[in-house]
Length: 66
Image 1 (cartoon, helix red, strand yellow):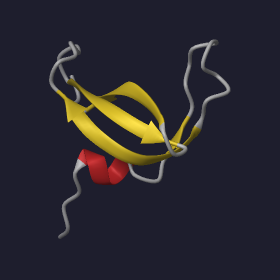
Image 2 (cartoon, rainbow, N blue to C red):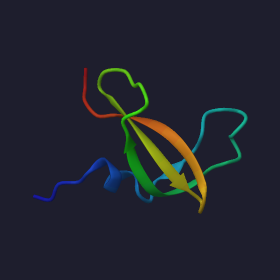
Image 3 (tube, rainbow, N blue to C red):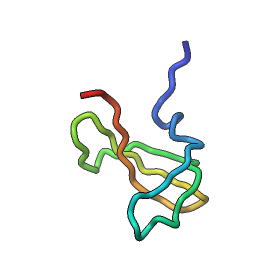
Image 4 (cartoon, rainbow, N blue to C red):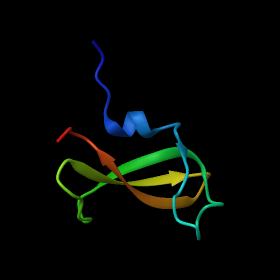
């Protein structure tokens, strides 16, 4: 059985921001890295992602069921 990391699963996914100011900045994720300097609630992890060449964003990913 092959195991996947969250970085593997994010690669190639479409990023659609929820903020109105950034709604036109969407695209395919081509890089992700876990961030430990960002507070997230229990059960979530923060990731810095790069999409559409050189656009960056921080997202939170739910990693466990509560």
